[in-house]
Length: 286
Image 1 (cartoon, rainbow, N blue to C red):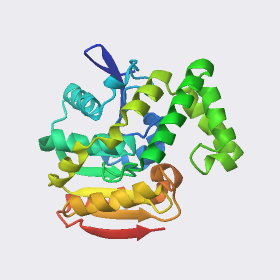
Image 2 (cartoon, helix red, strand yellow):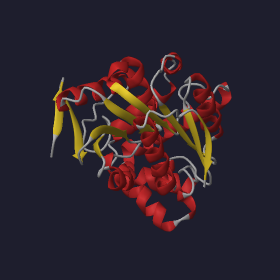
Image 3 (cartoon, rainbow, N blue to C red):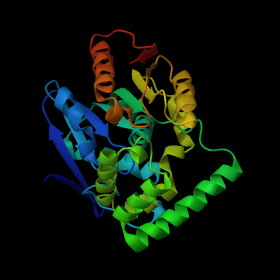
């Protein structure tokens, strides 16, 4: 399988189809397989480049939160596109991947033809209440100890038992099984390193957003976390001329829970870009 190697790091990737390159960057705890429904629909027209973010899937997972800053994750993508000889592409990602796509557009604007930022607040609405942040940190530390001692599969089972897995997982047996399988493939170094680094909260994303001057799609599920719903709207206000799509009835990871609506939103956005039409506005689907 293809791997991009640099500085002792291996980035696992796959390329699907032909056409203008479209990069898809998965969310936290997932892998490039997350995009299977979108790859099926989009690869007949675009060259889809999907990869495992470091700390995930089959990519390297070094120990230490210093290895998972947004700056580093952005440069991983830059190395990958250089490795593939891609000079310009559509860059898109969801949640953690959305932060990487926004950061990449900020650091390497000449490489980005259009931008897709999905289900991420762009640094505009991180948790601000010290008590809430302290509780989150305490929960994360307990989770880290459990994952180290018992492994990621048992950690996922603990999430289900305590109701801390994202809905609708806790109420559906089939989804619970999928959740355990997904987390079992998540390297513990990646879970701890990315969780501590919190690249999706990097403050410099906000400055990057104000400087974006390419067509941009921002998506969010109507039932996502309040900080994501409000943060994406603020992000939309800061990226001039962006298109804001609310997908009704979806929680976090809209591409997973409402794949047809999500993929159609992407197709319509890219078709508008290619036709030279304005993309600005707000749309609710579903």
